[in-house]
Length: 125
Image (cartoon, rainbow, N blue to C red):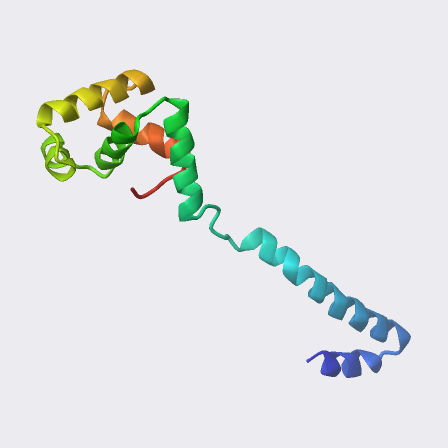
């Protein structure tokens, strides 16, 4: 294609050849710029999300068990389901949930899920 363009613009003399070279090198250098600005690459991978969640837990002084419960709450599970999956009593789940709400200063599950999503960038749990 570039050869045809050079031949065609070469018919117009010196100016045509210069325009052809500008076009060839301009498109070659413009392609990476277009890719950078118009192609959206994933900004975070799973490991980065895990590190963000760990720093979230550290910032709010969340224990390991409370972190497990937060992930279960954010995935939409009920207290009873969480208790069954983690092999703890329903009252223990409620106690941990209360401590989590106190530490993060939220009032319900939706606010907790929004806070976790905002601070960590996690979309799926």
